[in-house]
Every structure is written in structure tokens, then in C-alpha cells.
Length: 132
Image (cartoon, rainbow, N blue to C red; front, top):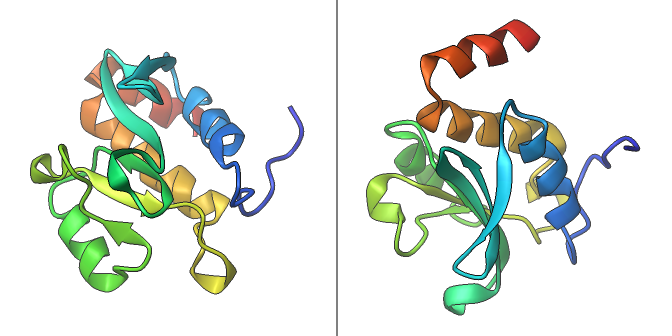
């Protein structure tokens, strides 16, 4: 696969998300509620393309305790509490933003890796840590 762009194509960030998620150990992709979603036994991230009344293209992902509140308070234009799963601490990340506020590859890779870590068993965490 060619090098991922620094920022996703705001009109179609799915290939970019897919490449990041599927690079993590034992991740599979399935449709869940009509959206591409990534699983490691449990779902840890889901693509939202204007579903559920959303105003943006985004990814919803599991987040470590306190991360959702911290990031939403820090930058509510980029991060949000997604419907349905936000009460469980999941984080919404706007992907169709542009300019300095847009998510970049490193930031989103870190966010998605943290999401993976929240659902991964220890054996896979040690595998992840051994490959990074």
C-alpha cells in the first residue's frame, strides 16, 4: 500500500481509517448498523458518514477513561460525545475538517491505537507493544 497522506481526503477518509485500523494485530472489519466498523473481538471503532443525523464525517471509537471529557473540552470543534455510545466514554472525531484543526495521521493513529488498547486482551497488548 502506498504511503498514507498526512491528512485524509475530507470527502472520503474511509480508506485512510481502514489502513490505520487494519494495521493493528488481529483486527477485522465488518458492517455494524450499516457502517464499516473495526473489531478485536469487540468493536473499538466505527465510521460515521452523516448517519444518525450527524453534521460531519467522523469516526467513533472507544477511549480510555477520562479521554472523551478532556478532548471534547479542549477542542469541541474536532471532538464530540457520539450518540448511543458516548455515555460509555466513546469519543467522536471529526474527519472532514480542514486546515490546522484537521486530524492528521499521527494523531488519529494514536487515538485509534488507544481505542484498540481499551478492548484488547493482554496477549495482544504485548504483541502490539512488541511491534512498535
